[in-house]
Length: 151
Image (cartoon, rainbow, N blue to C red; front, side, top):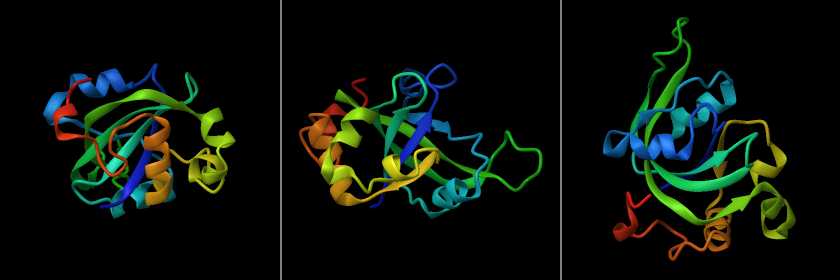
């Protein structure tokens, strides 16, 4: 399993919007950066992603799961962009702000700090564990099965 971070502006598509989609999830459309697209092409079903509210809030608010591999982005007329489908898994008990991430020396090399403009980013396992700890998730590896969809 790999870990990722997906950014979305909450006034365009929020954590609550994703949770309302239920098990069907939602295509992660609209990414128009080659590096971010390539990250999505590297994703596998079952990979977990932090859901980050950018611009408004600037915080990690939940965990979602990749449920469909990279496929053509229906919002793209050129045919060169792809997306994955994700579904909400668990809300962070305590949102982890960008300021909190930047203040933590264990996260100084996290892409959220070093590549802050990139909308789809890899997360190292040790970074995943630390952010989960900061967000007060019981398990740093994956959300608890009983907590799934209790958003």
